[in-house]
Structure formats: C-alpha cells, structure tokens
Image (cartoon, rainbow, N blue to C red; front, side):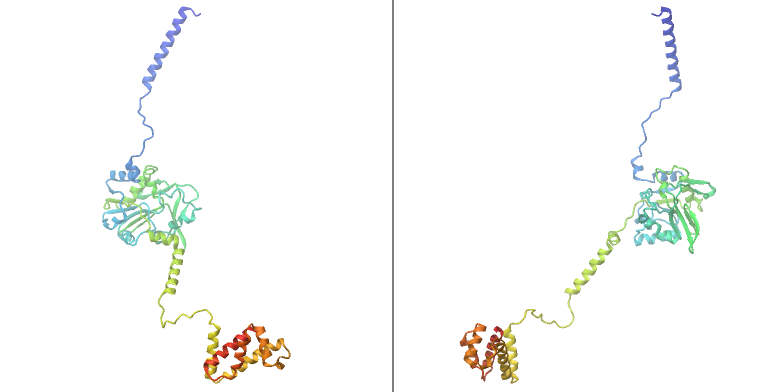
Length: 382
C-alpha cells in the first residue's frame, strides 16, 4: 500500500498531464470536413472536354461543346477555330469537302489517335494502327505516325513560352520529303496567310483527367493564340460527337469477298435463266427410240430406193450364218428342219417362222415392213 500523501501526489500529476494534453489538442488540431474522394459531376462525365471548355471561357473564348459533323458547314470560317479530338478516316464525302474548306481558309486543331484506344495501341497491334499510320490527312502533309520506345514529354516554345506537356503513350510524327526524314515532332503545325493547321497525336491529354497536368492547358491556349493574339478567332467549336462509317462501308470492308462471290453467282444465274437471242429449238428427248421405230425408218428408206430384196437377203444370210455356228451341215437341211431348229433356238413358234419364210416374195410396202420386223426379231433371238 502506498502512503496517502504519495497517492495524492500521483493523482495530481496525472490530472496536470491530462489538462496539458487537452490544451495541446485544442490548440494544434483543426477540424476539417472530409467527404472522401470527390466524384465527377454528371456534366463532367458526359463532356470529356468540360475542363478545357471552362479554362478557355476564363480566357475570353466562346466555346461550343458537342458539335456534330453535320454543323460543320454552318460554322463561320472567319472567326472560328474548329477542334476535332479525333479525325475519323471514315468521313462522308460532304463532310470531307467542308473540312477541306477549313484546311484552306480556317483555323483547325485535330487529333489522330482516339482516346479510347490510346492506352493499347502499340507496335504489336499493327493492324489496329494501320488506319492512323496511313491516314489521308497525314499523307497530305508528308507525316507518318510512330511510337517512341522510351517515355518522354513533349516540349514547345510557342508564344515564347517554355511549355512541357504530357505524352503518356509516346506517339510522335515523322516528316518525310522526297523519301528523306526532315523532322520528328510531338505535334505538327502549318501556318499560311489564311489558315492554321495543328495536328497532335494524343489529343486526349486535353480531356478532364489530363488538362491540369504539366502545361497541357497552356499548350492548348498557345495553339489558339499563335498568330492570333488579338483573338480574331474567338469561337471554339469542339466536334466531339463521333462519326461512324455507314452500313455499306462496313459491309464492304468486312465482307468484300463474300459480296463479290454473291455478285458473280447472281450474274451466272441471270445468264442461265435469261432470255437468249436467236430461234428457240425444241428440246429433244434423251430416251432411246424403240427398235420398231428404227426398223420402220430403215424399211421405208430401202423400199423407196428399191433395196427391199437386197435387205431381205442380207437378213436371211445373217440368220444362216448364226445357225452354221451351231450346225455344220446347216445348208444340207431341208426348210422344215431349218424352221424347227430356228424355233428351238429362238423360242418362236414354228407357225410364225413358217409364215415369215413364205413372205419372201412380197409386192407391197406393208408386207415388206411386216417381213422385216419378223426377220429382225428372229435374228435378235438367235
């Protein structure tokens, strides 16, 4: 047990320490409301370039968001800057013509690689990048798109400002003239008397998530101010609505061989079932004619040409030759014996064969045809 005085001393010391801690707590700590990580507003989620728009408005520009390609022909070239975050290679003919007007007489800024693909387009995905590498607009200015192997930042001295901006995916431009490399650029700009054209590969660095990093916002402002410090082009039109290729373009792009095959099949079918030129000939039956028809035709021809007797003799001789193969003494047999043997070999009755033999001398066409038919039947059954 501690003495009573010692207990009082310890309790007093603890009380002093507690009071000191309370004084320190209220004098050194500040109460702050913390709602967690701020979430983007619905407007920011729907408009990826909302932050860029607000920044430009604070600098005195008038910004039109979510402009569609169909409105391109209504934009005043004299006081406007057209901003195209991603230049699609599938532009319809009308929009292509309107774009060419701005390229000749207006101020225009556009990107090549779309933000939705910028994180996974690389050298291994050669087929995916081919549309951008061979972009018609790049070819017009002798540019090709390539990717740097090492990470780097873009730099600029526009408006005498030392600007460093992001290039997270390291896309660059290579310029060639007459097959020779003339420069490598993190962005490309061409200025003429009536026009200003700026191309940047990674336009997504100006969206809501990236506009505040490095000097990205200052870079875009410098794009607008270069050669236009007095803001003669004060209206900014951002063509952020995507434009997709038409159904028939996609159909041809993905099923061209199938379409060609169907077209060829259709031509063959039309040729097969189409109307032919010239006279129409009857279709002949492929079935063979009956033996009687052949005999009638031959007999009529022989009768008309007086060959009846010759034909009858030939058939009798053919029957005799066949019977000689079986009977060496055939010619020594009398007629009745010959008739019996023929009947035995052919299965034809003796009476029918005798009737045929008695018709050897004939004087009418009908009798001749009947004789020829009967003789041919006998010869066939031997």
